[in-house]
Length: 293
Image (cartoon, rainbow, N blue to C red; front, side):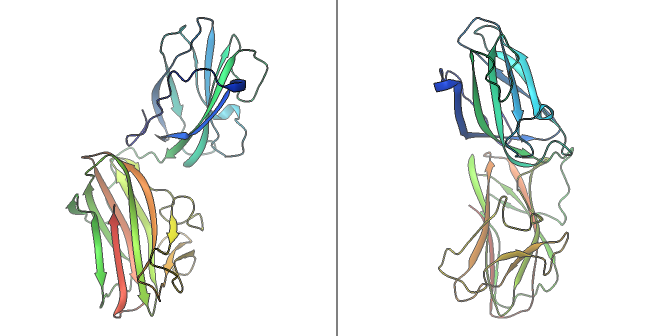
């Protein structure tokens, strides 16, 4: 069981061809600097061990420093193990990575070795989240919207010519995936968005909220749901609030373009959404909507 309702439940999978199974379609979210309990079983009574690695640096090599679990199995019974995710730093990195679990008979498993005659290796996907020891205080007072998916909407006569904080406390009506969407239109100037954040308790739900990767990836998707737009949104260095980058969006000749990111939610839990916005000018051709759906 991971964070925000995610888990890998992969029991009784049988034997895979050549002892390897690519199961990266299954994913789990884990928080850095945190330990997790897991369970594993085998069909055999013989002495076996399991090792787990996460390719934190995404170089397609599972290095010894990236090993997060090791345990001897208790015959065919479910055996508990502890997986320790290190703090963000020289080894652990936030974001999406490949996780490898390998079980070997008699030998200590090696992530890429074929020296043992019996065993099996599965690859999964893991999303490493930032660890926050306490629930962070929103950068401005959060407005409670209940389960209403419309957080903010405005058009015509908007006067936000300096970065302004918006924050909302939202309760999820369901368990599953939710998408945060900014839809933007600006004639004759630009919208700027920076420092987007969603916290569930102490867990940051978004990737690249400050756009400091220099692009929408990882995390965000830029799109034009209403057809082709002139000067659509881009990540650049024109006017960041903090850091080096922000979203600049001057979409015209369409209803709006959008930037969005999806994340996992649990029914009844509260999520605090915050972001900073500004526009270069005022006018009747300016609109914005921010939704969770």
